[in-house]
Amino acid sequence: MDQSSGPVHGLAQDRVLDTIGYIGNTSAASIPIAMGLAHADGRLTAQQTIVLAGFGAGMTWGSLV
Image 1: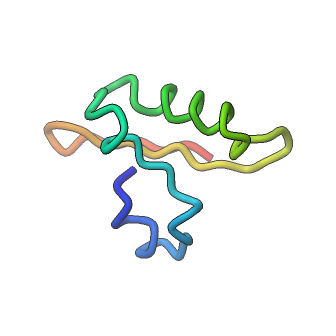
Image 2 (image 1 turned 180 degrees about the vertical axis):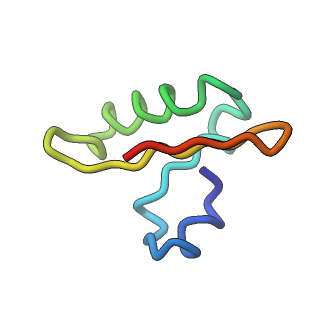
């Protein structure tokens, strides 16, 4: 998820995980990589509600709560 989309949806900057600057565009692997990094950093814990959102070429998109 791009950092600029967080404020549009009322999310504080520290609630949006952006891996592009850290590891680049990983395409379809972006969400599982981000989840792994968030878990390793302690940002993703049990009993936490999260949103997984992705978009790609051809204006494809998907999300999951």
